[in-house]
Amino acid sequence: MIFLIEYNRGKGKIVTFRDFDDSQRREAEDSRLGIELDLNRKGRKGIDHEVVLLEAASRDALLRTHGRYFKDLDDLLKSASQQGDGAGVSREPEFGAEAGR
Image 1 (tube, rainbow, N blue to C red):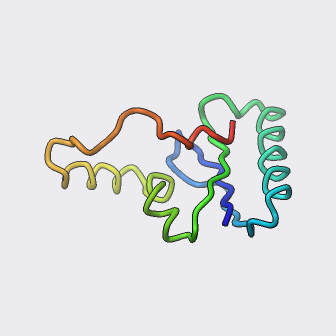
Image 2: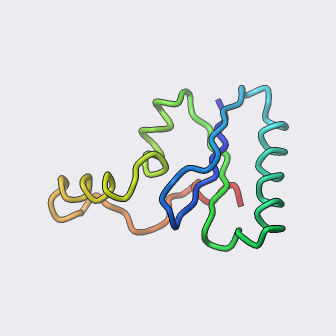
């Protein structure tokens, strides 16, 4: 499956979420491009929004690999505190998270 996510970094919220069958790759790419162009026209792209296409076997798999898109700031902080000193929390961008750019 292919997943299209538009994520508002400032608000920590998903703006757009769509899934596509693997056979709909072209439609997914066109949708991503349309969102990017619309954001650029509105002057909102910059660092405020991420627009990505991600591949995963299922939505559950996507939640495991890219869970930050589905958690709000409180959830992320709670997860970090449960890991002790935050050793498991990466402050670097995830590989693939920028793939839609």
